[in-house]
Length: 250
Image 1 (tube, rainbow, N blue to C red):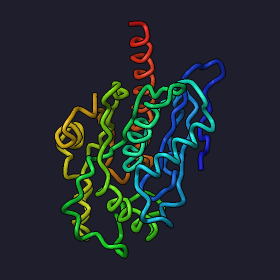
Image 2: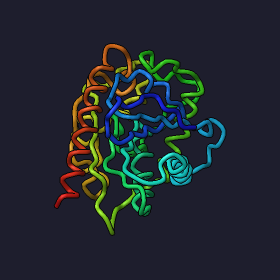
Image 3: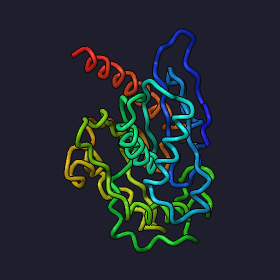
């Protein structure tokens, strides 16, 4: 389930980053990332294809346990692309009740607020996008539908007793264009919002800061765009660690 995809440089004290899978349940996109100066782990989930009834809360509890098997105490960063960003938010909320592991920050990579009430045209046998991540197969399309159904029944967690970890959103600057599949516009319905709809729709401030990255939702990990997301993630991770240290000193 957990794969280490990058190792921190010798002598580095940077805390590890855990990236959660997208709607396909796979982590192949993260292998395209350039060096980020820290240990980076990616968490896949084969159940995305086999268990259409699992809730995001149940999935997140499993991912929390998987991380705890590697990090019994200390500090971590969590994040993910698309659905992975929402999983990161839920897992961070679980860790808020763990006295031994602290989540310093959440990095959401183009994870629009999950308002899919108007998604009625996407069918399991329809291609997601000609420009989609490779491989864009029927399994991916079915997983996306299952993810939409899962998110219909999910409410973003609310931090009451403690402060939410510093949360950033990396926003793709382009829109998905698909004449054959106009329903794909659901992924861009909040594209004009700096927080991709979160701070407007969630009822509270969820995203502390937003950063632009090149490409559209489905191609940000392709060669022409990967440098942008890598550089931004690396910079954001370092900035979050610095902010966490400053909070500790206050």
